[in-house]
Length: 474
Ligand code: 5AD
Image (cartoon, rainbow, N blue to C red; front, side):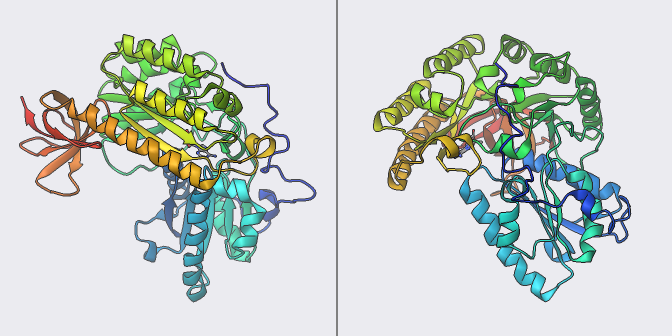
């Protein structure tokens, strides 16, 4: 159920420059920049907001900058360039960045050579508004323009802000080697952009059209990641399971990645229920490397609300899908996303969401109040008419419900043995390790003789809504 042609994504969207709202093109800065070579190696600090895709994009930015001779640093005080990689999904994500920028501007007043850049979805979303709100920002760059970061660093010397805000439906950065933090879990972007047209969502407007990276390149990446010591790969995409490179679908990709020698675990986020094909479910059921964990965004339990959201499934279809997946993979852990207070959501609609969450019993959930985003279809066509106090109450009700459910589900794991990939020291106690179970539950246990990167069997002794606590058994 891909939605590739029914909506003109590149028309009337805020990311396209127009006569009324002109945006300087990258090439306008080219007379200042001499090609892509740096004139002045910089120390760049990247601060990441929002989703895992942004974390992965920051790794990409780090790769691009390093290749050009710059250096990324972990100490913000040592940096002469600060890039905020931002999120536009809800209003509070943007408010946080505006506040952060005001703080950074204090430093820039003391140190006028400091370069401040706003990258990612918020730059793409706000464009001129952000320049007006924070005229001291030197670089504004959307998710498809990161190749121009080195050029931007050279260009800002002139004092003009550098704007890289074109979307590019062919940009997949497949040839760029991201620089990742060492660890056991690597995030691998397999697809960029989004062709779904959920009415509440800003993503298609700030990340452009969906494009998949060819399977062969991805399997080569995974081989390299294994050589670097990674044990677990998390495949990333906005609707990750609509992956198709022209020859291979998402199920094929899951199989091929999980067959790479040395890979212990494969996960993915976030799929769309409409693309949960048998090919995907078969790979999850039958590949021992694909984890028995699925994040399946519900958004609402009311069919009329789902229709207004253009989610392309009904509440009944979602429930049937969950039953089918649980039937094939009984041990699967399910998590979800839910929005309350979407345009026109009645008490009855909300109760249906509450009821569906009680019936399905997700292992965990990310729950949000609807946030009206300029540029989305809902913003144009529907009224954000649910009072803030009702949104807040509904959110609290489902949070309380979900806490009870998560706690009950985790309590039920007590006395069972779960396989855990050891990630590192527990934050609270250096005598203990933490890691994730196959079902993606944080698990804490005494170190014994285990090493980071091992998969150990942990017998669960106690549990909270968010953590399993136990000890290694043989
Ligand atoms: N308001 C509130 N939540 C939103 N999400 C996406 N757009 C909005 C919005 N405008 C939530 C959805 C999505 C998750 C990543 O963020 O639940 O699945």
